[in-house]
Image (cartoon, rainbow over all chains, first blue to last red):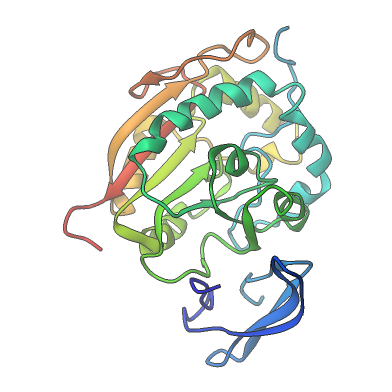
Length: 52
Length: 238
């Protein structure tokens, strides 16, 4: 997670964990305050595709 | 056993493009056929391609990223730690193969500057309409002495001739492929601010003729169906 940045502005992302197991985050989000965009993490997979 | 004459794997191995405007949905739709290809009809081709990539691995520093990771077959076999793709069905399978995967676009990578020692694009380039945009992002995330590893199916080989025929028959995946000649590929790499440092060629057996896994050959061999190009950032650039 340390290497992840916003795909658009390359700024820092704020991690929110909703569910995790001993290995990884299952559900949560990565929020870019600068762009005001929240990128979801679903079933352990972050979706960092830029907004349409 | 000869290689099946009509491989279900598309050129580009069925990966998401990473480029906005090119939907990844067909790759989601054909994911089962695509992934089965590696264990079945494409087993010897896959082994041949892996051998050529394995030859360049000792020159690469970690960590590694694959752009267009697909279902993670190459990433798993080569030990690539992180992969991105735009096709969610592909990524779901890749996530079960020991690679940290994300849904992300190659044109807008969600990684910090200078965080990878090598970035792989394995038969992904042929699906990218604006490859320079992807190469610029790859350049950004590579450390100063990092390497781009571009594995391509060059135009004019018997393989890409076969894929071109499929393309003209309206194959849902091949229609999007753009095969580039060796000169076009090298020009593209140079315009992306990289310099070619090493090339390895393989797959000189044509479609329907593969009876064994081949050993890779040094250099850019005309007629090879699969070529691995290792390129570094231009000297003095970061």
